[in-house]
Length: 298
Length: 64
Image (cartoon, rainbow over all chains, first blue to last red; front, side, top):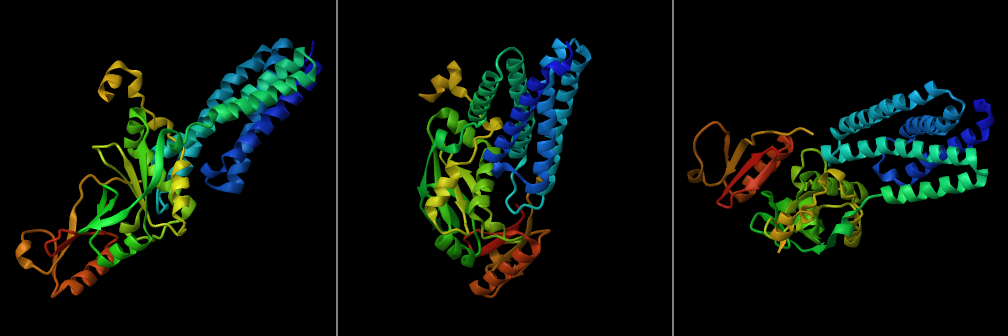
């Protein structure tokens, strides 16, 4: 039996895998740095991943065992994607007014690598089902798997682990507070009055001790500041360090507070923006999974 | 993103010379609060530094 006998399986696997890659780019544009050309790079690699996934089973059936070794080669290739994505973002971060921070970049890079494996999986499942069953079954299974993976992979956002609400921005002497959380010491009187008038404070209250540990992570807080600054804009230029959005912690209560001087005056939008920030994989801590952690929490 | 290990005071602006002294850092003496404010603002914008208020008549600048 030659591989040509599985034309249909390969073609359907390829198409579905590729569509899945496009779909995932679409639902997650926010994390995307340089839109048009970055998209082409990722679509091309997604195409290759889909092709590799689609030919795996037909190649085995055609007794083309060498073809399967290409899968291993592919895994190596896709590891490079993580490197590529990390390097690009690190370079771009140098000229960001509100940087993403290394933790967030690492998370994004890992997501881009992982997506290609998911594409391979979708293509593999589709093509193998089409090989043995009527093609519509393979197609349906591929589509369902795609939606399932996309949903499952989406991860948590801050809203899921914490209560997000507006806080009151005020000064005690030179010290800026959001509710009872100290943000920073601001010397210039003019800056203080500007911050009091236009500043927005958002309090993030962790729902449990796991969330508390996540919010304590510096990379997570930097990601929050970056996302909100991206979505709402920030009134800051170089040489104005006091207008940098900051996310600080009250170590006694575990509550975090973000202070930002947004371009957008609608304060509720700031709350919504904080709620939508993804929880970084690297910031997830689960002390409550251990006996010591559970005992420490009561 | 670059991290600085040590945060240095890079300049001091004061209306009360008695509260500061000692070495290494330039001290700018201001006649009154508004002059202190102005000097601190200029230095901050030129040096890309943050102004902090010690609330005893002395401001200092540092990088973050």
